[in-house]
Amino acid sequence: MADSEKKVALVTGASRGIGRACAIELAQAGYDIAVTYAGNDEAANKTIDEIKAIGVNAKAYKFDVSKQEACAKAAEQILADFGRLDVLVNNAGITRDGLFMRMNAENWEAVINTNLNSAFYMTSPVIKTMVKQRSGCIINMSSIVGRMGNAGQANYSAAKAGLIGFTKSLAKELGSRSIRVNAIAPGFIQTDMTKGLETEKIAEHIPLKRLGTPEDIAKTVKFLAEEGTYITGQIIGVDGGLVV
Image (cartoon, rainbow, N blue to C red):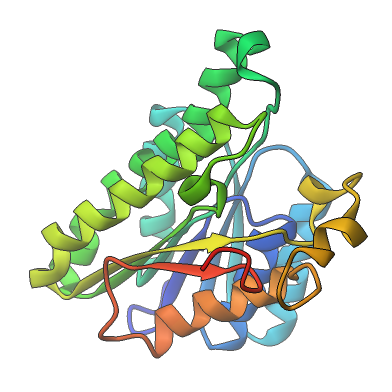
């Protein structure tokens, strides 16, 4: 039975990488955690085990965030299971990189649907709960390429830039209900997405001279959820100083 007084966080794409780190960080802050993932059962189960070992409740939900009906159904189940929602982290994302002249509609739509539309699909069915509570924190995972663009990532850059506009608009709409909406714009982070890149050369161009870690992002998520009570509508760059 759900504890209606216990803080609850929902993190999409949380079986590995940045999402996993965010889920664990919020669990350490005392949140019960709803983990969503698309396909890797082993990774999701491992994440759930790690969260439960911290001493909080956790449950995994497998579905495709690029499908509106699946998101609505999952959100309904999550609210039924946990009874409330205090933090939503729209983190799920994919890449389908390629020069624009060679990019097909399938790769464009896959990235837009998973990285941008999913934020609408997940936020829409839970926002009424936050409004009723008159409290809540929504954190959208954007990217530095949403602010500066990147060759070969027109689809990814467009999706991440869209999240910035979504964040700013939603913050203005929901502020009067004590719901805060912010975005994080990670730089180069050590995840599966950056495997294969020449990380040493990349680090040379970063003022802090290193790639970030998923935990760097997770700590920012925790700050926005717990301490940043007068911060809304902001895009927080966590990129080692790459974009200033």
